[in-house]
Image (tube, rainbow, N blue to C red):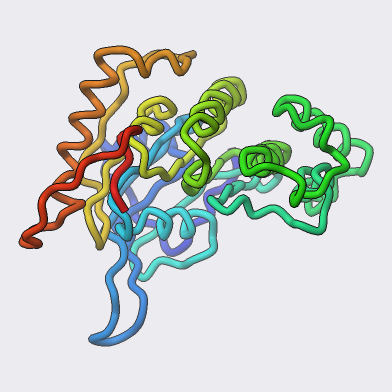
Length: 290
């Protein structure tokens, strides 16, 4: 395990804290983020305290605008916190990788070149980089499209390219920001199941942002529930499904009951106190309304 890379000065955890027994892969302490200055500043996030153990898949759910993506971007090093700290314990040779909702792949590069992109940055020899990229293309059913450009691909295939590119660098931590949100329900289910299989094989530490309660319960070892802005973690649930698991857990009574419980936790956060609005209905996949 590599040395910790704090975003700001670290705070020592209490002696009985879980982190003193097993160092977490990701740790947030009193983390906040505001945008703007003075009286016009907007408090977007926090304070947030959270940990993710090595190899754990954690899903973060909450209403739109609660700071989920802000937290992920701080973890990726794309934003700095206003206060507090977020620390990643990663090997410098195996950095964190991020997958965005809008794919984040390059239109002017072929599928193979997109998947190889992170390996090229790491200066992996071309022959090895091509082999690793082609291996991930094969695992994700994209071998026949290695020479194609993204414009020729469907949305689901583009997201597979983004996933292959992220996993090809063998990251210690995978950061995913609603990667399946723009896909239709059937394709989203298929990619959930593919991701479930891949991450159970690689045991990659994963922080996954989603509006879908169903998605969180299928994929996650833990589900963290965030409040309305400024987002704080208000609840944690552990889906009662062992590993390895499959998408068949969706049909179990435990799955239905926990999805309903999570929705009740989120209902007030979606409408907000004193809004005078009727509580909205959740989506068919248990998605939190935007």
